[in-house]
Length: 539
Image 1 (cartoon, one colour):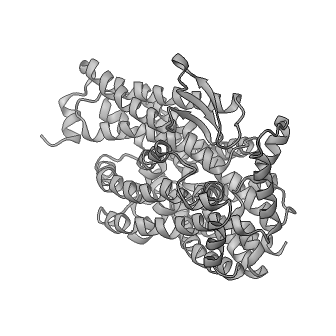
Image 2 (cartoon, helix red, strand yellow):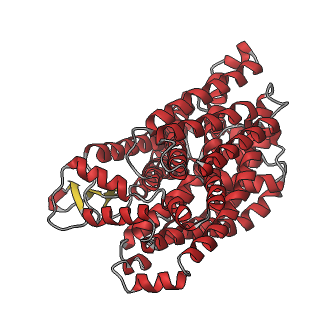
Image 3 (tube, rainbow, N blue to C red):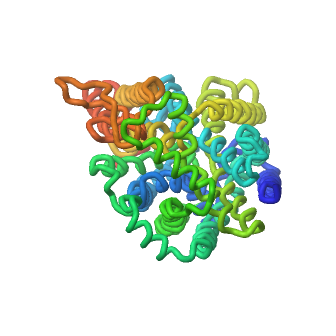
């Protein structure tokens, strides 16, 4: 329980920082939800980066690398390090400028003003909310996994997830954006240090990584050091995933919190370096874990994975599901630290992993901000009940949302990596055309925006239906779902649904952009008037 007690102490410290830092401005909506648009350059960089590096980046990346190899780094980190800074430069700065000029606090406020629409904005809000909940679920899963692992099972998964959910809910509830941003900055520093410490400790414990790599090259694990396990189209699909970042409401809202436009300069330059510092250790440790047979928990994972790949072996569905859970690698970094680090260091590293896991606080606050601004205030609640009631409503929404995410997390069997890529990232990448069209295309209309939004919602619902009704097949095999003319187009693979060899994010994003263009072209009468366009485009 010593590592678990250290993690509990860390959670108490984080709760104190978030609540203490957020004191004072709770009665003012702009201060509570946007920290008064006053974040300095360092906190802005660390909090913006930290809120995008959740359990997905630490636990999910290492777990995916454990099963698929070094290619995991190429799938996410390399494309994200290029695409995300570009979107922050081109789109993030424009969001900041328009938010400052017109007082926007959420993306939906911008969409409503830009396209002169009301209820369509509510539809966009509803779809964004549903798509962001998986991100919150990831935090609960990561928290439960971390506490269960560092405590040796003495803290069960359900209790660990509940504790993390309560802590995050606590400092978001009391601290608002100011407290959340401060906690994010503090936690980002911790998990940046974690990678360097963990990779050094595990290397020493395994007798050096050179020996581990040479051993992998000479073993059946050699494909983990190549791209053999990933097809070119699957690899290409991941270039679409980073488009989701600027469409995420919490990232767009964070862009509006900067005190000055110049704060984006440091963020854009340092973001790729931070990506390298987080993803490289996570992926590398996930790959090396395949040689950590001296750690009993990892050896058990390898044996379970081997059982799943035995040809001709037919197992009941329940047995297959149990083996998949045992072979899952979301906790592999924690197992490595547990196996090779001294107890005191294992405890500290467990707290550092928890720092990354808890970065979903911004998503919860973003959804609270959107609900109070885009629903409560838009439909007259602020006018009738006042600004203090708006803040109280936002806090109540934090409680409801956290409870919902926790209950769903207890029933979700998928890995952190797959949940993020199949639902949250794919859905928001498909909503990216809305942001681009609103900011850079005069000819876009509200009906084009509605069509793209409804298409995204329907596509994500279809993916979810396929993945929940058709059990995952063994790795390396696919189950045909739709085969016109005998050619499999939609299939069910171990990692999720595939469309002609691509991840769903590719057709979802392409069709969304087409829907925006085609429907906007067919509805020119719905284009905003010259006064509205003049606020967004130079004449």
